[in-house]
Image (cartoon, rainbow, N blue to C red; front, side, top):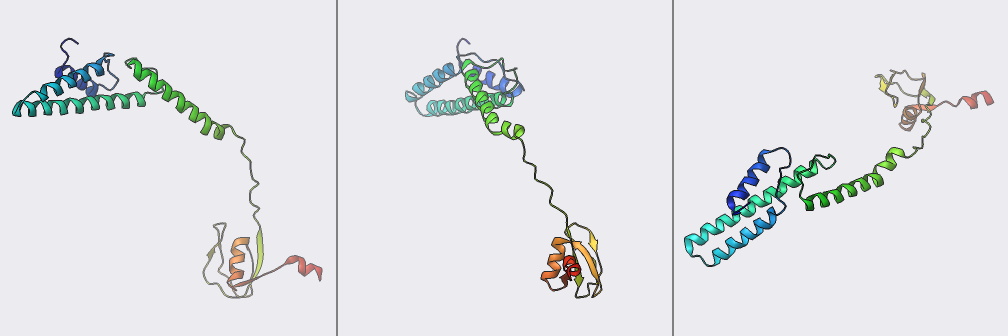
Length: 187
């Protein structure tokens, strides 16, 4: 890139914005961009009024598009971190993102792999047990029990075999009494 300047920076910026993949970038692109920005700053100090304003605008513009080039490249590299098609990486980018990939692999090993490989302790399913109750009140509408089935309607004095949790709720609300079968046969 002889006579490096604004047109070369804009060319790189345009290529990076219009290509889906990472574009080829000279290893010294950022160094040359920094030197060019330094030249503009020096020239601005010795310029007056309109020329100074124009140089300030050019400097701002250059800094803005160089940052955008950087962010576009970082985004593309990050999106392709696990793909081997990053042949257009600068040496510094390749080294940094290789370290990042290794760190992410280590993090995966530490957090995810144990979850995938660890033997899971299986708990026995909760025993489904029903409770016999004697209804002490009339319940004129069917109820949805804890097993999501409908029971009822019930007449006062009727015996019902309900899921334990639902039976306990009826007992707590004084709508039913527990019938203990063992007590009946013990007498």
